[in-house]
Amino acid sequence: MRNTAIRQAFGAVVRSSTRRIGLSGKSARVSLPTNAAACAFATNTPKGDSNSTGTRSTLAIGIAAGLAGCFTLAQLGRKPLAEAPPRDNDVKDDEDPQTRLFRLDEINHHNRETKGYWVYRGDRVYDITDWVPNHPGGDVILRAVGGSVEPYWNIFTIHRNKDVYEILEQYFIGKIDPRDLVDGHAPQDKIDDPFKSDPVRDPALIVHTPKPCNAETPEQDLGPYVTPTEKFYVRNHLWVPNVTDPDSYRLTIELPDGEEASYSLEDLRTKFKQHTVTATLQCSGNRRQHMTQGSRSTNGLQWNVGAISNAEWTGVRLRDVLAASGFATSDIPDGVKHAQFVGAEAYGASIPIDKACAKNGDVLLAHTMNGAPIPRDHGYPLRALVPGTVAARSVKWLSRVILSEDESASQWQRRDYKCFGPNEGDKPDWDAAPAIQETPVQSAITSVRRLTADVLRNDGMARAYGLEEESIVLRGYAFSGGGRAIVRVDVSTDDGQSWQQAALKPHESKGSKAWSWQQWELAIPARKARGNFCVKAVDEAYNSQPEGFEPYYNFRGNLANGWHRVPVSRAD
Ligand code: HEM
Image (cartoon, rainbow, N blue to C red; front, side, top):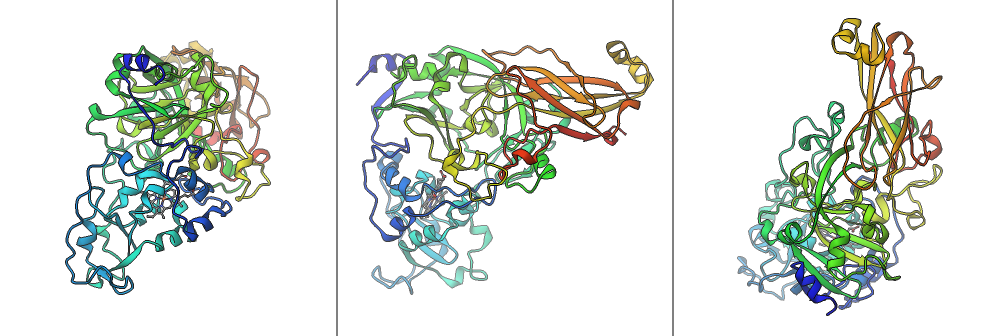
C-alpha cells in the first residue's frame, strides 16, 4: 500500500476501497440485476426539473450500472441482520401478493437492522432488499425502510417517474391491511417526517421553504462584514444530519487507485496545520427573484438579495489532507480531474482538482465558523469550504472526498446549477453546459436610509460626506467569484442616467485572495434621487454587471446579476 506510513502519521486509517462512488463506474464490482425495467430506464432521455430540489437526473441506470455494488450491505457497516418480526396474520409466504395483506405495525417493524427492507407506497408494500445494493442514490434509501417512500420522493422528485415505479413494482409483496388505512392511505401520523430532527432556526431568517429549510438573511443582517452565525442564510437540499457522536465521525478520502484513507475529527484538528479564511458563500439562485421580475418566470426558490453571507472559517486545507493520503497535489496525475464531495445526507457535488489542490485556492475542510463549531445547519461537524466558488460546491456534513476523472454524478452537479441561453426552454441539453463553479460579479443595495439634517450632523455623516441637507444613505454589498477583488462600485440615484462611486468599506480578511464580499456606502442629497437607485460593481478583471436580465435569462434563474434597482420611494 502506497504511502501508508505517511498517512498513518496523520492518523489515517488506511484500507483498500471495495467500492467506487467515484460515479464513473469504472471499478464497479457487482453487476446489476438484469431486469427489464432497469434496462428500460437506461435509455431514458432527460427531463427538465420542476422545482428547486428536484431536477431530473438523467444518469439513470447507466449510472446505476456504474454504481452497482457501490453500496453493498457489508460496506454499509451494518450489524448482522436480525430476523424480521413474526407476521401477525396467518397467510403463507407463497401466497399471491395480490391478495396478501400486511398490518402497518408489521411493516413498521422492518428497519435497517432487520432482514427484509420493506417500504410502502400508497397501500402497496414492497420488499426492496435486492434493489438496495443497486440503488443509484446509495444507502440513503434505507431511511425509508419500514415506512412510506413518499416523503422522500417528495424531496427526490426524480423518483416521480414511471420507470422508477416500474422498478418498484418488481418488488411488490402485498398490500396494507385495509383496517389500517384511512381513505385508502396510511394515516399521516404513521408516515415519517424526514425533517423531524432539523435544528431550531433564528425566527428573523426569511423562510422560503421550511422542509428542506431554505431561508435568507434579512437585509439588516447583510450589513456587518461578518454575518452573525445565526443569521447566515440556510440553503439545504435535504434534511440536516444529526451527528450525536462526533468522536465516531470519519472523513474518508478515496484515492484514484481505489485505496482509502480515513480521518477522525480529532486527526483533522490536531495532526494538520489549521487555517482560517474569511469567505462569502452565495447561492447560485441569489437574486433569482429579480431575474423573474426583470424577465420571465424562473424555476427555483425566489431568493431576494439574502442568499449570501460572509463568515470566518477554520479548518485544515483539503490539499494537505490529500497529500497526507498519498495524493501528489503538486504533480496531479493526468487521469484525475475532479474532487467529488459526498455529504452525509446524500447531497453531492464536485470541484476541479486544480482548485482542490491549489495552495492559494484555500479549499478547507472546515470545522469552525466564526470561532465556534459549525452549527448543524451549516455542516456540523465538517464541511467543505470552497472560496470564490458557488456555494453548492461547499458540501456540508462532508463524509467522503473522491478523486476522480469524472464530476460528481449528482443532480446538483449535472443538472440544477447550470445556465443556458435565453431561448433555450426547460428541457435543455444538460450535458452541453458546464456546472457553475466560480461566480460572476454581483452587487446589491441592502439598506436605504433617509437622514434629516439634524441626524446627519449628530452622527457624523455630515462630516464624512460633506452633506448638511436631508440625505439618503445607501449601503450594500458587492462580490465576485474566483477571489477577484471588487475594485469599484457604481451607484446611480437617477435610474442609470448618471453614476457616482460608492465608498468601499475597509475590512480585514484572511486568506490568499479576495474571497469575501465588499461592503459599500454612499450618501447623496435627497433631492437628487429620482426613479430608481441602481448599483453595479466592477471586479479586478474589469468584469461588470449587465443592465437587465433578459439577454442572459436562463430558465433556472441562476447567476442573476443584473443591476440591482430599488425604487427611490423606499427611502420614504
Ligand atoms: C424504494 C425504491 C426506490 C427506487 C426504485 C429508486 C430508484 C432510483 C433511481 C432509478 C435513481 C436514479 C435516478 C436518476 O439518476 O435519474 C435514484 C436516485 C436516487 N435516489 Fe432512489 N429509489 C428508491 C428509493 C429511494 C429513497 C427512499 C430515497 C431517499 C430516502 C432515494 C434517494 C435517491 C437519491 C439521493 C438518488 C440520487 C439523486 C442524484 O444524485 O441525482 N431513493 N433512485
